Image (cartoon, rainbow, N blue to C red; front, top):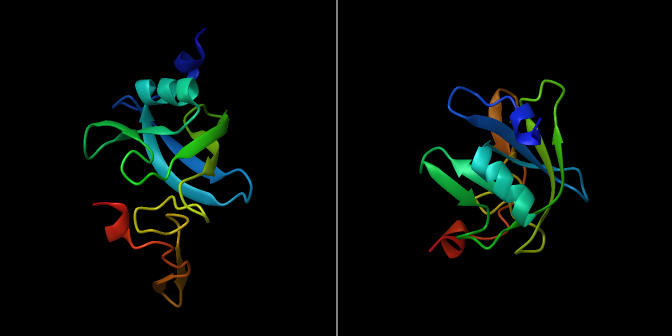
Length: 129
């Protein structure tokens, strides 16, 4: 059986993907992949996602320059979630979020409110022109 056939794709042909920084263990982001995106990720050794809003492949860093080099791919016990162990490149420290932060998970629930706990490392207006 082909390794791609072992993935449990949803009814839209997608699988959820978590990108985790290899060095720190930080969870950087969550995205989706279709079969082609997962194949390209393995082929290129860099993260390629499927943008549901744009309806096309999204090569992480194609606009921002913040590329994710993939070191390892894992699949969960139900074969329905992919984990990428990555190195975030293009800025030091790495920026994974379109808001210019290291991680998309920069808000913490405190006293009934979402509070930003990570700084903006680079102004998003200077990233996306």
